[in-house]
Each structure stands twice: as C-alpha cells, then as structure tokens.
Amino acid sequence: MDLSFGKQYEDFRGEVRQFVDSHKDKQPGGYDGAPTPKEWQQTLIEHGYTARTIPKEYGGFGAQPDIIESRIITEEFGRVQMNTGLGGQGISMLTPMLLERGTEAQQQEFIPPTIRGDISWCQGYSEPGSGSDLASLSTKAELDGDEWVINGQKIWTSSAHIADWIFCLVRTEPDAQKHQGISFLLFKMDTPGIEVRPLVDMTMKANFNEVFFTDVRVPKDQIVGKRGEGWLVANSILGFERGSLAPPDAAQARLNALINLMKSETMNGQPLMANTQFRERLMKIQGRIMAMNYNDMRLLSARLNEGQDAKLAGMIVKLQGTELRHELEGLAIDIMGEIGLSFDDNPYVRGDGSWQRHYMYYLGLIIGGGTNKIQRNIISERGLGMPKEPKVEAK
Image 1: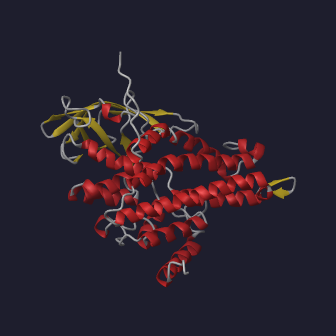
Image 2 (image 1 turned 135 degrees about the vertical axis):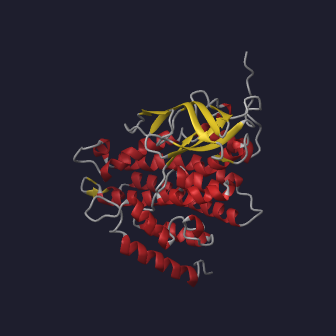
Image 3 (image 1 turned 60 degrees about the vertical axis):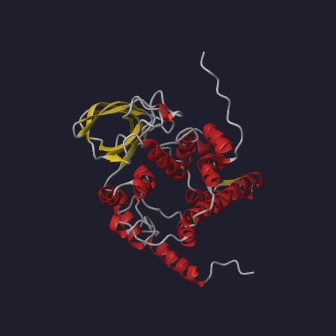
C-alpha cells in the first residue's frame, strides 16, 4: 500500500524545502541586514507561503485551495521553526470574514493592506458586563446624518494600544432582541473620542486594554453586513478566532523546539530526552498534536467539499489547542528545573524567555476568546446534542 502523497506533491515538498533551507538564515531577527516583518511577509506572499488562497486582486498569492499543499507547507516550516509571517486579528479573523461577507469596496480597501501588515487591527467585543454573554453588550451607535455616533466601553481589547483600526460590535437597535440589534462597524483608532487604557496581564505586559468611546463619529458606510445583523458577522469572526488562537501548525513547530531543548538540556550529565518520565510526557503531547493536525486536515477538507459536516471538529480546536500549548510550554519549564524560573534579563534564561511567556499567555487564552468551560458547554449542547444546561431564574 502506497501512503505517499504522490510525485506531484513530493515535487512541491521539494520546492518548499528548498525555500526553507535557503531562507532559514534570512528571517526577521536581531542581526544586521535582517528583513523587517513586513518585508518577510511580502516574501512569503510572493512565494505563496502565506495568504496563499487569497485572490491576487486583493493582494494574495491566488492559489487554488489544496489540503495537501497546505499541510506540506506547515510541515516544512515547522521542521526548522521557520517564521510563518505576520498574524493577528486582522489577518486571521477579519480578512476571511471580509472575503465571505464584505462588499467588493471593503475587500479592495482593507484586505491588501491588512495582509501586508500596513494596517493592524483590534477587536471591540467584550465589555465589563458582557463577556461570555456577548450579545448583551451595551455600547451603542446612533445614526446622525451620514455618521454613526458611538458611546460606550470595551475591555480586554488585545493590541488596542498599537492598532490602526478596530472592528467593533455596537448596539444600533435598542428595542430589538439582544441578538438582533447589533451592528458590525470598522473605524480608525485615532478617531476623536477614543481613549485607550492599558491593562497589564500575567506576562507582565500590557497586551490587553480598556477602550472608551465618547461621541465617536464613524462614516455610516463603514458597516459590514446589514444594520442590526452584526451578530451573524460576529459569529463568523468568532469561528475564525477560535481556530486561530492555538493552531496545530504552531504547536508542531513548538514541539520541534521542545524536542531540541530536551536533547540539549542535561541532568547528571545525561540529556533530558533520556529521562523516561519526561519522555513519556513528551510522547503524550506529540500524540495529541498529531491528532490536532489530522483534525485540521478534516476542517480544510470540509471547507473545500460541500456536504461535509465538520461542525464538531471545529468546536474542539480552541479548547484542545490552548490547553495543549499550556501543557507543552509547562513541560519545557519543568525540564529546565530551576532555570525554568528565569525571566527577563536573567543570564540563564533559555529561548529569550519564550517558554515562560507562552506558558502564561496560553493560561490566559484558556479564559480568553470564550472560556474553555463555556466552550465545553457549546461542544456538548451544539456538537453532541446533549441537554442544555438548566437556567436558574433570577429572583
């Protein structure tokens, strides 16, 4: 039985491997002559290794979707922990949503500069009283002539302090049912009336922010979808978000780095890879990453083939991925022993402190983007058809 992909794909793998091997020392980094992240992004787009299936008229490579080619690119980049280009909410969440639901004018205006990295985005969803129950949001937008006037507050807004634009959920129909009175607006973060206050998280960095809107005026045509139907747009975004928070290809690259760490770190003169307890933990993580990779291929296949039901497969990505990454980063810290407690400018820190940062970051993501406890409820009720959790009436 021949389980290979065949000559066509092996030739493609050779092309990707040649690029990876010839460019692995030309990635962004702290050395003279290193490309900027935006320059590197353009190189990847030109070769079709990012924005691969985005049409050329929107700045992408314009290739036809191909599950096997996508998998080969992921495998070869992960093999040497190659920089996979820019990410973020604009590229991984807003762009695919605009391809599905945006107007031609919006696609032309926003997709090319977003995937090039010329525009960075943040997401205005959560509010102090509307976290898990997002549809109860109260930030309002009222139409005044040709402009929306926005007042309210958002919280846990990642990257708001550095973002150029925001995609934001606002209530435009105050008398409608809560899911039906929401609209989806796009506007610049330097618009008068916007105040950003940083929030320091567990990584000791201000990755989150509070955002306040006071009479913020936005052109009325900067709405995606119809007025009052923003919940449909929001759900598209949430689907892309949950799939992007802990993708299996990033976990695979991180696993390869962990394996190298276990080969180089020693205890009593022996590499940690020789320790049976650590090796057993590694193999369990390796098996779970393999399962997530195959689940990812199932999702890719479902997007290309109408009629395939991969709803449940998509629901588990965020839940499994964030918990898996937190466990993976934790294993790296454990094998380093006391050195694993190093931070910042400690001379013994490994990997520039990335293991510790990612450990805390993914602990946060187990809560962020919809808590994993709520995600389990969604999986059980909507994915497995189990009885809904009983609601307790307010007294």
